[in-house]
Image 1 (cartoon, rainbow, N blue to C red):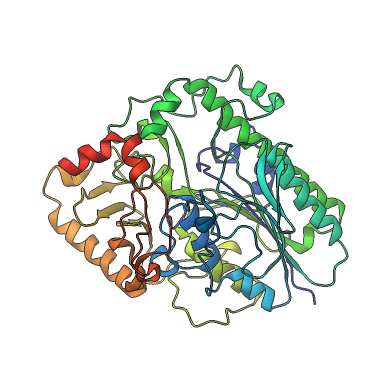
Image 2: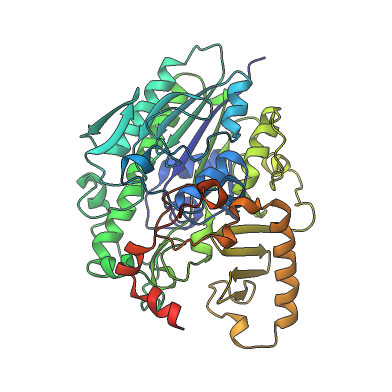
Length: 477
């Protein structure tokens, strides 16, 4: 019996709040909403790191950044940096799928290094050169040849995915199709078709907060403040344009008779704030780097007719590092390497059964020297080596407005949570590339981390300091 196909759709910088099915009444996402109605939506799915490259590498490998070595978004602004294959020699679920007879195809963003060439078991490789950029004139690789795509890049990615599906409607081998949109990543101004921006001309944007500027905001918040409304229109329009593309993919599966035999997953690499907490951005939208819910929580929807219950909302706490073991378990496959991964399979949850994480309900995140423990009630953030650390009671303070450590009296609780956090990370960290020892500023990674870089600094902060005076002020504190 043929294994089910897999269509994995991932957006870029999408907040969990920016979907109709998640309760946002202002944004148009009818196709993603239909996917949720036909499948299962997770309310508490967390990325492993709140910025694109490490989040994507963790999804693919099932490892935390301190295991795979990608600690920040990857800069590719010169030929040497662009040619580094950051996951070389590492094992991913796409490698496992390829070893088990799947044909693996990429349409869209990669952003894990060496975008010119196929990696990790992929054979079809239609790849964005960078991590983002303009929606018209985007740099793309097709068959290893770089060209400028004059069409709207969301449409180009969709068309390539649909073309792949049409060419595999009668294929004997199962396929894995990785559709990686750049939407709704910046830029938002003058980059999206009028048919989508016009939808939001009269929108009140009551679904996002309009708060005073966060004191730790970086330059992006100040740029957006020059015309916040136009940027909101662009962000919402980018999501809707992507939703239309997803609709085309779902329609193609229906037309080809593949929907019943295909697991469809939709998620995002990391979250995003459009004014939430008073800033625009993700984990590096502030300095010190943040782990707010809007940065670390992402959409996650899975549909497989006849197997995954329809119209179900799951509140289990799960992480992107759980995705590799879950996908392979769902397909009845096992990785052929011996890596010690932190994730667990949440297939029982996908099938509508009871699910509980072994050892307690908790997820972890890391972004360079910043680490987070998040259980059903508390979120603890440790910033190495100098702080400031943070502790939020999400039961009484779901908006993360009150850092309990600022009051005193929570020393015992902090000690307990810090002990749990450090014990967990000690179990999985590779000391050669330990993120707690990496100078990650949120300004981009430019080389291999730690000892893998043979003494060459892996991170750049020059641009960050120029654009973000808060960093200099913070260092003086």
